[in-house]
Amino acid sequence: MDLGSLYILEYLILILQNNFEIWLLLFPMLIIVELPLYLLVITGIFRWAYRQPPPDPTHFPSISFIITCYGEGDAIQITIDTLVEQVYPGQIEILAVVDGASQNHETYLAAIRSKQQHSSRTDRRIKVIPKWQRGGRVSTLNAGLALAKGQLVINVDGDTSFDNDMAYTMAKVFSSPFTLACGGALRVRNHTTNLLTRMQSLEYMLSMQAGKTGMANWGVLNNISGAFGAFRSQLLKQVGGWDTHTAEDLDLTMRLKQYKVRYPKYRLRFSPHAVGHTDVPDTLKGLIMQRLRWDGDLLFLFLRKHSEGLSPSLLGWGNFIFTLAYGVIQNVLLPIIVAGYTLYILINYPPAFVLALSMMLYSIYLFFSLLFFIVYYGLISERKSDWKAALWLPIYPIYQFIMRLLTAFAMINEVVRRSHEESSMAPWWVLKRGKKF
Image: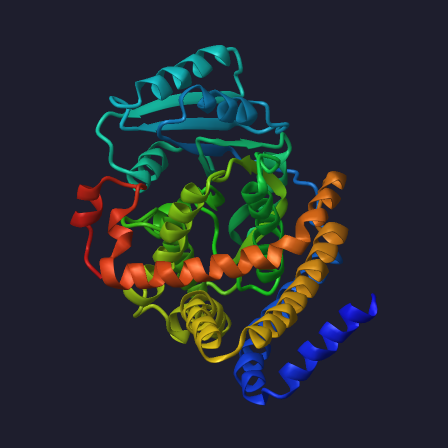
């Protein structure tokens, strides 16, 4: 580092030292809210990595895969192929439920062709279920659940493919009679497309695959993904299947947590090595629209639909505290605070101070991102090529900050416009007729 750079660094440090009130505002947020989550996840990952691994299953339960199909076209055949080709000795039933089959005739015909292609497999049963009138994602899942014959039900998206040991890995998790449900890991298939997909790939690795591994091992799994989740079919039917409105996966996870409070031996688990591959938005508009839906749904679920369910008696103290701290405070309130705090700093402080504070925050979050990646790569990742993603880590804190600002906008959008009622996951008449919260 040359003398000019050292001078700039010393100057920035001096500016921060002379603005003590900013430290008082900033560090309580970091220490009280975010640092405990980092510690929880990292210790949970170590706990998972050095646990006694589950034994190989001696019983292979029958599995029903419910594929939600809407507009995939020929790509639905890839999803069906990867499920047929599972290295799994048990029976597999594949239910391709085509929502709005009259409008999505291409997808319906592609699923029929796939069924005919694999008709010789006696241990794989493919059934194509057309829903001629579009009813949305929830009605598609429940239509499949009503016809599912398997002991396990795994819901998957029609644009997702899978490693061929996924079913076997899931069966190992369910070899424990106390596994109530289990989330699967999703990786980004189109990660090399552009900078946006590379950032989302890192996000799936660190926030989703690593984060859920750590949380599940402390019994506070935040969500079982709607794109890839496994359930005991009878228990899933017992809690009512999927419910209308949006964010049906988070809604179901909340109800499963409430169920297991009455049966404390049950666990919600996450399997980082049961792997699916999905495409993420590769345009800025596509990413913004996705996150407006995802983040706005959080406020709807926590503060509207499940407001009365956020109690220790229904969730248990562990999940209640975690949901309050990291479902409501971190994901709903903190982004709004960060956005307001950013605006306050930009208006009231000189550019040199804003630069100094930004560099300090960037360094902190880059450190945690690097730490998470090292833990993820060393203890969870099953692909040696994942190290290449580390080359993009210097940009990742900037991406995280932008996503936080987008989350803040999504929260305001939900409060003002009830944006969950404008979701593409179901027709407007389905969402409008659902119970108001």
